[in-house]
Image (cartoon, rainbow, N blue to C red; front, side, top):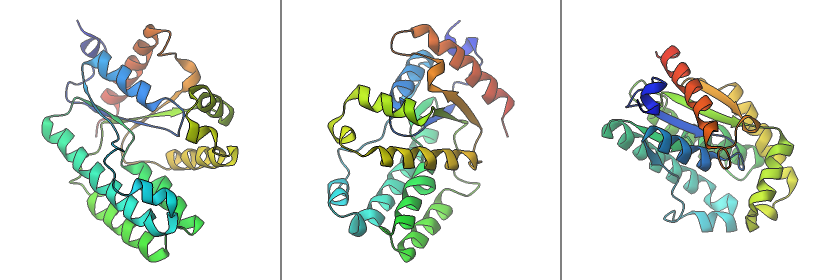
Length: 219
């Protein structure tokens, strides 16, 4: 019996991993995909035509960037379900509107008109009965100190130069977002409760929780 069957996880399940920068979304995505023999759906940044422009001029390009992300994630979500499921997703379509577009609007780097247009697009595309929502969203959470420590450990230059205040704000925004999220069932996992790098056995308790949540949260 394989691990997917052992923990009664459907072969066509679509599981999305969410959480702020530094919590280990990519590590969790690959570990779950390997354990379940699922495919991965990873965020593509290399082909994004707006990203470099955006970092140079937030106000001019924030709307373009968010619309691009919305379109790409929407197409990817349709592809996953048309394929028949069996995917682990690194980051959800919901975080763009619930966190990033909202942040640009509140900070004044996206105009009220652009934000309203973006929200209308999002609602028309995603918040409908026809959009295929994931079977489960796994939210990786930890304290601000835990997150900052992990960001320091992985040592990415751009992240090291980012002020702590930014990570504090993102941490708070993610917590506010997940506390009001209701588009699909949520499994919250503390990043201190497992170690997927040095302890491969840590994945099985997570699989057990995922199987339980999927089978008791279907609607």
